[in-house]
Length: 404
Image (cartoon, rainbow, N blue to C red; front, side, top):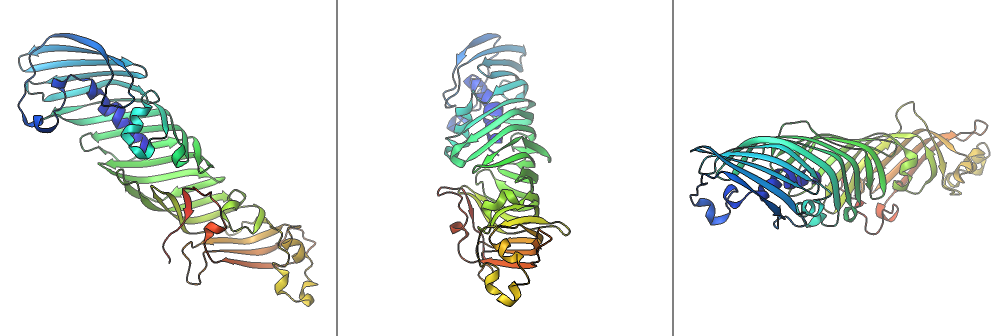
């Protein structure tokens, strides 16, 4: 939810930085001192760079003050500058309490990228963010605390975070905050993207429906197109202060040819679609792949070509049997593809009851109908999967999980 935190910084919190001190909430011990807004009428304007927001551009502000009656002070604020247009109005009593309205707010996040990244924290200091943020809202100001409701949208968003090997583009966000002070939204808020990459793995359209409540983010539904199919995440929650979560991912119709690098090196090529589920855990260290199973659906087949391994099948059969099945030798050398009527891949990275970290079962026979060679092949892997499947020495994608 990195983009959400940017929005709070540059759209909801940003305009407050342009107000004169008498119209802002006091900090520290001064917050308890009584203060009054004098009955002023007139207009002030100038150029300003908010020093409290690192990397912020210089903007032009115009403040119009009116005293409509002894108990009502009206302040109209217009801020214009590179990638910035904000129109805001406050109606306050002499003590500084009253109402506020954000009539217009439009921010080009690329202009404020350094400020947005500083707000996100050191973890994201090496990235860049883009997008057009617009919003409006209204509410109350009591004792220096803004309350009320706001509507925020992002279009043409992009996150490029090389340190975390993440690229997202075509980001769209629609967010309604029902309670700004509590950072609370209604359900069904929407974040979408066109595509991107993670660890050089490309992915397509994605969608997340979520709810905000303070630091808690509850994801109600999430899906992404990847490996020629789709991955759908079960509901889960995480904290924006501790971005860590575990979730079961449902895998729908991924193309086995696109995940060969994630499988023990048994297949040279493959064609077919797998379905199943896998456990995932996300922490600041990256994404950890846990236990899971992928398999063909009943009635579906897959065409596989084994990596040349002479003896893989034939070494366990006597010559008297092999002479009736000439296709076995051609399958194990990769000369003839195998049509699998049953294909199942299981991952247990921490080891199952038999000590296996992965297993593959293939049941089928040669694609060539002229060859006879019924196959029921079981391949078991024991030991670290990291030694078989290389994500890179500094990869944030790895295997792990609790032993069942």
